[in-house]
Length: 132
View: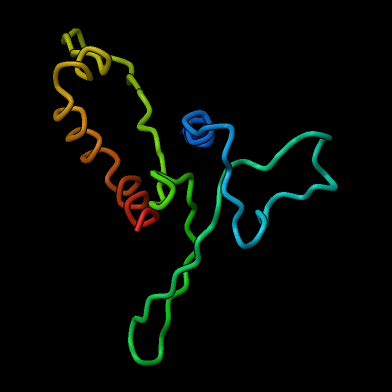
């Protein structure tokens, strides 16, 4: 499970960078706080990620402050985040014939999404909260 989690993290980081245009980056108000130019190799740019800080009042005395990632812009005005649902085929210890994820994705997208909602509800809730 540890290696699967690391692989999923790397897939999402790479996916968000692969779907973006390489030109036309928007300069944000502050630089990426996690990129150190002094430690980076020459010519390396930070990943195209911006951070947005939001405040939510919970009650009269408590304010929740959170940082969320922004992966890009749509039509130059709408912020977007991008995530990937990863294919995972658990080993089949029975002789039952189970349709593969790849077979379902083309013809039964709703079933695939319902299965992901059931098996990865926390991950999808986290992505939804990050996208607000």
